[in-house]
Image (cartoon, rainbow, N blue to C red; front, side, top):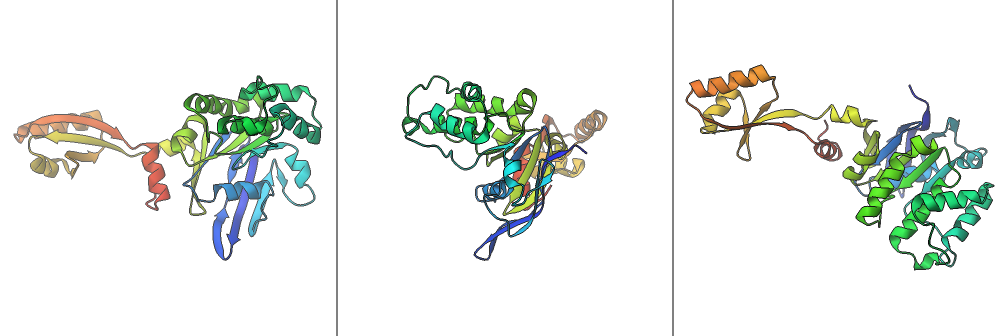
Length: 299
């Protein structure tokens, strides 16, 4: 098994007797882009805050980069970690460069790290413009620049495409997707948008109502997609009985079979005097699987 950049066990958090994160066991392989997916309010941000030590867990353990996170070693571990949680925390009366200069001094980094980070996120030409005059998308880019400053081993990004226009979303996705290859950085990226996560991640974790309902590779999730054959005929009632199919939205749906079995089915329909109007293969989408998991129906 690959080394884990993040491993949690029984991670839980309660507020006022309400458990918002319940026994989460997160396993983020080193060198992965791990999409942390779930509806709004599912517990994603709270989980990420507990990993960073910003919120104290009610129960459970957190290992980051192979070390158990506690009060004694938290700062040493976090020196190798970048983060963007909920919304960028920047000084609005300073420029982007001045904001990054504060962070790089705290981290003991060289001044060249600022230019690299600004160039990477597309803010190299903002000059003396104050952050208070930035658009939401520009502030989001600055938050990412803070997160990747100095090439940390691990970054945690909470809804990183929030506020970006379509071009900015595409650029952000590409940057995050290539972090392991270009910078050697593992990324944990949270989102409530499946389409975003699917295009940038190779591993997925799905949380619903505070509980992990699935995690694994994107390839493994796709393997759970159900395959069906959809028929339209001149006599769907008789065809349904003959094929063992179910009627749904004007189609007959039957479990997927191989080409030979499909050919035999079409011959059987013709022999029964039933015309075959159309036949097509249907594959369950990742979105269908996600909705099944987050609504409690399971795979």
